[in-house]
Length: 254
Ligand SMILES: NC(=O)c1ccc[n+]([C@@H]2O[C@H](COP(=O)([O-])OP(=O)(O)OC[C@H]3O[C@@H](n4cnc5c(N)ncnc54)[C@H](OP(=O)(O)O)[C@@H]3O)[C@@H](O)[C@H]2O)c1
Image: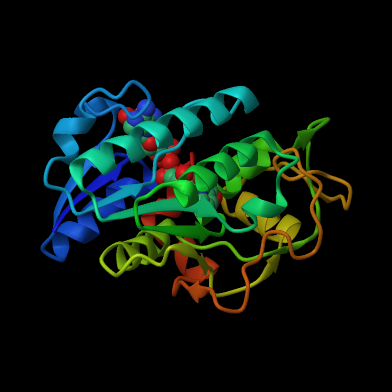
C-alpha cells in the first residue's frame, strides 16, 4: 500500500515511516523539508497520487493558542480536500487522550477543531488518541514553571513510549477505518507530578516539582482522570523503567 505520513520527519512520524516500510508498505515521509506543506498546499497533490492511506502525525510549529488553531484548521481542510480528489480511502490522525475534556487549553482547541473536521469529512477515518509520550516529560516540566519550580497537579497519568505510539498508529493505519476514536496508552499508571519528578532526577535536573492540585495542564484545569484512557484502550509494552535504559531517554531534549 502507498501510505503518506504527514509529519513523517517528526518524532512519531519518522518511527512510523520506518515501521511501515519494514512491513513492506510504500511509506512517504511528507513534511515541509521533503517538499510537502499542508498549510500552503505545496506538493500535496503529487504526494497523494495513488495513496490508499494518509496518516497525519504533524504538529503546529508554534504552540501559541491562535497559531495552533489556525494550523490544524488550515492543514486539515487542505489535506481532506486533496484526499477526496485523490480517492484516498482512509485518513488516520494522531490526537491526544482527553482532548474533548481539555477545551480550556488553546492547544487542545486546535486538536478539537482537527478532530471535528475529520469526523465531518467524507473520507473514512480513524482518530487515534494517545496518552503523553515519555519523550515529552521534560518538555512538560519546562511548560509548567512557576517561580523557578515545576507545578503540576497530582492526577493520574498513563504515558507511553513514542515507539509504542508509532506501532499503535501503524496497526490502525493498515486496518479498516474505525470511523471513530480509538485510544492507546502506556502499560502503567502514575501520578503526574511524581513521574515528572522521576524523569528530572534521571536527567540530574535539580528543579523541584511541587504537587499543586490547582496547577493547570496546558492551560486547562484538570481532574483525577482527565489524562487517562478508558478501559478499551490498547496498551503499549514499554514500561517507564525500560524506556529510561533506551537511547531516546538519554537525549537532553527528551
Ligand atoms: N506530545 C505528546 O505527548 C503527544 C501525546 C499524544 C499525541 N500527540 C500528538 O502527536 C502528534 C505528533 O507529535 P510529534 O511530537 O511527533 O511532533 P513533532 O516531532 O513536532 O513533528 C511534527 C511534524 O509535523 C511536520 N509539520 C509541521 N508543519 C507542517 C506543515 N505545514 N505541513 C506538513 N508537515 C508539517 C514537521 O515537519 P518539519 O520538521 O519539517 O517542520 C514534523 O515532521 C501531534 O499531532 C500531537 O498532537 C502528542
